[in-house]
Image (cartoon, rainbow, N blue to C red; front, side, top):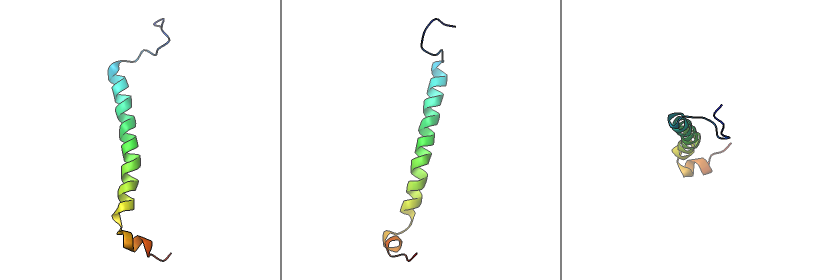
Length: 49
């Protein structure tokens, strides 16, 4: 116990967690975005389902 209310985490671990969360957010937005923008807009709007 450190006697403080804040968790005892080294700055390197903190940076690693923040970087990991950033990479997950990037992957969660970039991959679907690239997939959605891959098709031509005219083909996508006139496609018969």
